[in-house]
Image (cartoon, rainbow, N blue to C red; front, side, top):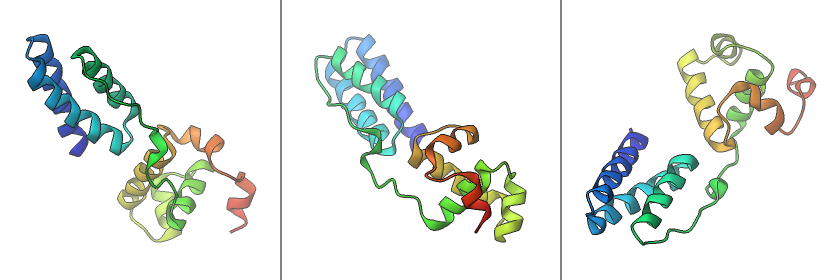
Length: 135
C-alpha cells in the first residue's frame, strides 16, 4: 500500500507540474521521492527526482542499498531453497511454513537484494547450491 501511496504522490506531482503549479508540485514530488527512496524503489525514486529537477529543485540521489540490507537467517534459508529451484509450497513444507509466508519472505529478500526474479538469486547469494543442500 505504501508504494501505491508514494506513486499517487508522484503522479499528482507530475500532473501539478504540467499544470504549471510548480510550488504545489514540489511538495508532492518531494514526498514521493522521500517515500520511494526509503523503500528502495529506485526507478520511481529516480523519476520523482527528475520531475523535481524539472520544477527547478534538486534532489540528491540516494543509494538503493542505504537501509539495513542484511538478510535474516530465515530469509537466507528461504532464498537458498528458492535459488535451488524449490517452489513456495515445497519450501514451506521443508520449513513448516505456509506458501504465503514463504512468498512474504521472498518479497523481503528481493527488496533487500535489489532483484526482481528467482533466477537472479544465483548471482547475489554468497555461496553456491551445494552449501545450501548441506544444511
